[in-house]
Length: 143
Image (cartoon, rainbow, N blue to C red; front, side):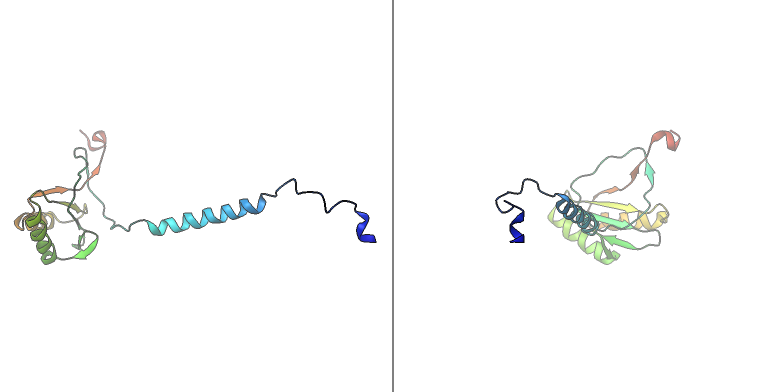
């Protein structure tokens, strides 16, 4: 009868909840979501955009063209070439007369390559285009 010496333990309820395991689980879930969120973000192509004080946000973008300093061309995030860009411009230009292209060229890209890309876009039906820039402070540019 040594087990019955406590007297009334079976009838007592639990009056407190230990929240330490709950906090541990929530912290582990938080870390998992933080790590997973870095892989969900859409990958982008890194270019060093030139800075300009004027220029605004452009909406209704149809084609996104990126020209890297080494001459590599990307269309809508995919590696491309001039023939593919021309075909896509003809296709988009035929569907929508208000179609436009956003051209992001690395600051170290030759001017000739940028002009050639603009000419390629315009001659294949997309007459509206914009040059993507990174906004800068006017004072930093000296005007």
